[in-house]
Length: 60
Image (cartoon, rainbow, N blue to C red; front, side, top):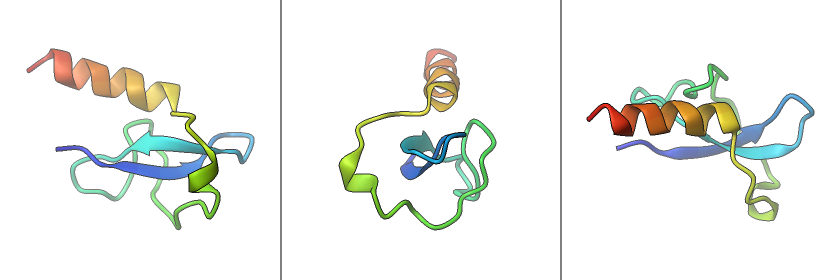
């Protein structure tokens, strides 16, 4: 099972990322740090993470 983590995009805005199974980084390669304090204010998702996640699901 994959988990979501709210971090930042390249502009610093909060986005939801998909964590790798070891939960130390995201599918797009961002290292997991503190969760964004603005996580409740966004419904945006990291496009790269979602694309990678779809590939993982499709390969099962």
